[in-house]
Image (cartoon, rainbow, N blue to C red; front, side):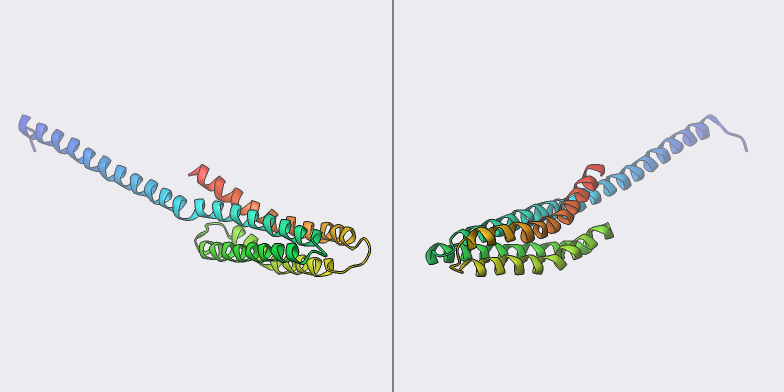
Length: 181
């Protein structure tokens, strides 16, 4: 087979065209991969970070309102106001946990799902301790507010921190995955 000048030019143009098509296909594939990763970050990781932060905020709010109810021990109006705010904080906590439950199946790390299970397991104990402290604060014993405040610090604060630690881990891993992408 003889390669004439026309055939050589035709093969040259065909090879350049094939390389351009290959480059376009590879670029499209990579762009699709980047878009998919970006969509995942915006649909899963960013909401995970935001919901973890919201849950930590709401846990702090419930502890604050519990303390407020303890300090309002013998003042029914103030205690009731604090109790309503405490219940609202726990409603927000339940909404945050429900949002995390919706996000969890799309998390790429099993460790984060395990952390969420740990959070869910510890939340009822935290609420129980906080409610018991508020209930006991209505007692009219001498120095009961101080004693209950100290018990609250000894029992509820460590439980609160035990809940927030895995939440921080979830947020940190989502942030690390987002930064790595």
